[in-house]
Amino acid sequence: MLPHFSAKLVRGGGRSYFVTDRGDRVPSVTTILNATKPEADRAALRAWRQRVGATEAQRISTTASRRGTGTHKQIQRYLLGQSVDCSDAVLPYWESVRSVLDELDRVQLVEGFVAHAGYGYGGRVDCIASFDGVPCVCEWKTADTPRGNVERLRDAPLQLAAYSVAANEIYRDYGLEVYHALVAVALPDRPAELFWFDTDALGQHWDAWDRRLQQYWELVER
View 1 (cartoon, rainbow, N blue to C red):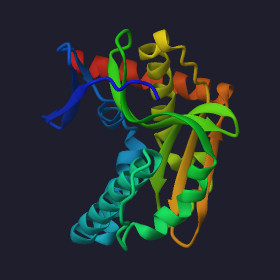
View 2 (view 1 turned 135 degrees about the vertical axis):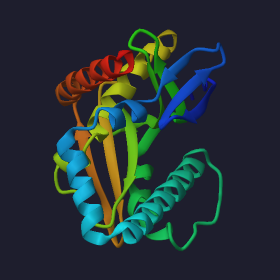
View 3 (view 1 turned 180 degrees about the horizontal axis):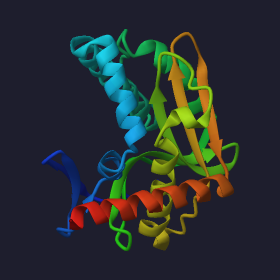
View 4 (view 1 turned 180 degrees about the vertical axis):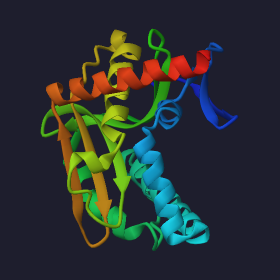
């Protein structure tokens, strides 16, 4: 296992930052992506809220957030060899993704902080492990219906590209080289939906992430 680097997540003003044990402050990947979300995505979200109503939209969002958090915690404990009871709300998603976890080997990092000082961002990686013998950054998602295509993952591929570059940077002295990524979408009553990103695909998503990162710094400097 790789060592964990310490960082505290601080929220304020609608943004979140990681403060490292050295006192460095870097915006989170999530903050950067939210701040630079395309207007089309914002409009689609507003339209959805209007269609279902504010109360129902809040209920759906809260339920999805709790479900995702619970599933992440269950996966984390499982990968760390800890035994815990799974709640009824999380159980269908846990059963969906468990077979994927059993295919992982050489788990090197679970819920660990990574950052890139040069680019100025940080984030918390779900997992770094090998899948089918290939080292990769893993991201766990939950959904009620299959995503179907990469586009419906929205910013997840950009997030993974950012994490992979940051992980290679912060763990350079440990010989880490990870150029692939895996998204596993846990679904009720069916196997998890998998999306695999090879080096070329991850590189393309890095280019998109880099543009969003530059856009973020331009917004901050205004």
